[in-house]
Amino acid sequence: MVRTALLGDKIAVNQPDLLAVSEAIEALLAANNHRGMDGVRTSLNPGYLLRAAQAIRACSGRVYILTGFPVAQTFETDGPAGAMALYRLCQRLQKDPVILSEAAVTAALSGQCRCYTLSPGTQKQAQKAAAALYKKDPPALVISIECPGAAADGHYYNMAGEDISKRCIRAEPYLDQANCSTIAIGDGGNEIGMGNVAQSLTGLDIRPAKSVCSELIVADVSNWAAYALCALTDWLDDRTMSAIVDIQSDLEHLVRNGAVDGVTGAPTATEDGFPEHAAENVMQAIHAILLQGKTQ
Image (tube, rainbow, N blue to C red; front, top):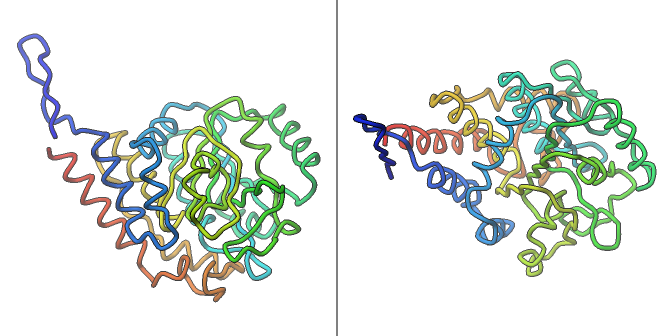
């Protein structure tokens, strides 16, 4: 769809329908629907990817990016790779990004990104730590990607229903105490922010997270949503598309530093059991949507 508006004697054309572009990408991100996220998507207010991109563009100052999901005594590739992409996006837009995660993840990312290590502990300890950090360096925006969220009983669970609370950072206070917009990205229903769609998660065989956020983004793989958010934000900024980031290189870096595939548990440069280069294929499709939106 093309928007046309009269500006004096001039006609402004070639303004893409931003909502339609966002919705097309949102549908693509959940097309596999292997964890029920396409059904969750339909319960959200359309355009959430666009609104998240606009929030990133509009903020000025410190952006905290929370990530890290424990698996097989280490951490998974899904989440940290997307956090790296979001970090670079914030740098391109002259924001001030910092990645918040547990020690193994920050050790893997510290050579490329500025990181702050969070320690597992009680809810009260996490609240105190978040308050201290925000008093010193308050956020302009907080983004959570593939970060475990507590269920109604206060415990944290993986997709198999196993209690992983002892290994989880308690990230909720970093959203709850933020006097700014918060964005959460998830792909299974047990991540931070999924309280936004609590009713839609009742039919899934999981222990859903109860925390909420300003804007929730769902996808088949959380990293894919981050890559899409970066592409859309760049596109909005200058109506051109940034080159596809070297996704495979980032995944390989994470594996060299201890990460595993979150589904298979294998130390492979893959995400949630999907084959190598699956994310790159998704990004090619997303760039096709953006190219079509630009030329309309």
